Length: 403
Ligand code: C2E
Ligand code: MG
Ligand code: MG
Image 1 (cartoon, helix red, strand yellow):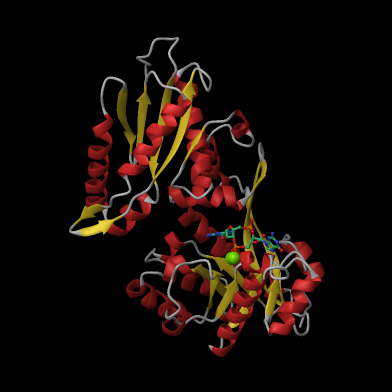
Image 2 (cartoon, protein in one colour):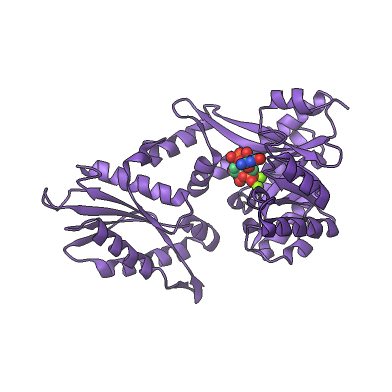
């Protein structure tokens, strides 16, 4: 992009990306996606004039060059862009709300050439996506911290599987009553040769956005089944490993056949595998119930992850064939000081128990939290108090006992 601005004039490069657009495309189809994109383009072009140049970069990405401006004026402009999205879009008389995430870089402060400005606006945009989307951010030099740019990270993530940079760590789930450990959660780890360990909070959202989560997810299921088999062969038989299933993967029609294949291929008992799904993934009940029923018929167990943070109605607890609830960390964190968190936690425990579900508290870090959960009748505890997620060999020596 050649800048039409004179060298001395300040201008803003505004990078816009629509939130969850891929999800919309995947669920409604490309026709709907295209119509909505056209609607977005029409709205954005209202701003088009000789000081404001709009470009479609590709897919759901747009850029705006705002000439002769400064930070304050650019941020007022971005507020106007958000305002455009406050009204819904329509496709087939259905109403859809779309939010944008926006990253901004300023010439000349954040870059003296097009390449640098684009890279830095994208970096700011990436941070917005990371921190919950639907807002905007100006580029800051300290954003360079871990990754030089998102594209590099995406390329690296694509290669991570072949380069065997991914692995699973396991975190024990301790039965509160007797301190026995028979179940574990498998958590994905990515160790890159240049960047070191990259936290799941950084690469899982990226994998979700790019669709890479699907192949990664199948890899995780297969690894976990292979691990269960190896542990069975070592004489640890009565165990269960939980894997996280992303919402996107949950909607794949080959998820159930794949799990069925993995169980047969590794000759493991289906009862030794659990899948964790978030409430959000299960919000569309017409599709969810048949999938869950098929999974249930395989004999695996199903837990609701991060319970209490989603927006589903409680009635799904009655309708869905689920086996367990995992109380989200955010409730456990302040359970000792915040009466409301304590009340929510004990209520979830009662609710889960009266529905015959296994209740696991996540993120337990100290004895006082554990004591409170024991008193409230919580079945299992997962958290740093007992152990961080650790590699398989450490887990074997610390927590597994042949039966
Ligand atoms: P999650 O499934 O809710 O996993 C629990 C997270 O809490 C893990 O973070 C774990 O390390 C952390 N944790 C456990 N105990 C404590 C504690 O006492 N204190 C604190 N502060 N944290 C604790 P991790 O491994 O960074 O994973 C973050 C999230 O990334 C997971 O949340 C899950 O949503 C996602 N994730 C991890 N592995 C996979 C995977 O294989 N597939 C998919 N789709 N998502 C995954
Ligand atoms: Mg989980
Ligand atoms: Mg969780």
